[in-house]
Length: 116
Image (cartoon, rainbow, N blue to C red):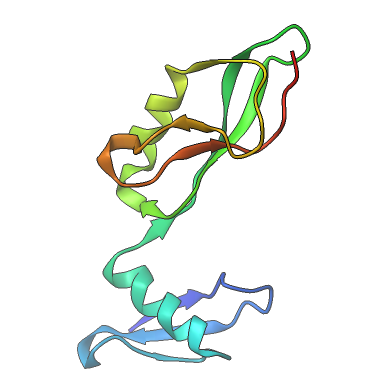
């Protein structure tokens, strides 16, 4: 039995996941909590937020994030890729900074507008 705190909403339900009985989840306040509990043990994923260098007179770095979940085990590999990137201003929110990062089917996108 594994105990988790659900992060799907601010309520923070205390979940218990029984791996021996088909990943049965108890303690959840909603169906999303049950799905989170099972997914966290079977295939944990995360959304990455970070920054990359930007070539601009007004800004040194721009915040970026993945536009979907990535496998938890790939976080450090993606962070290493982000250290290699320098983008040119102007940048709009949602601009793709790295397409299909590491072949995972997820893009790294800008999370802030940067003018010249």
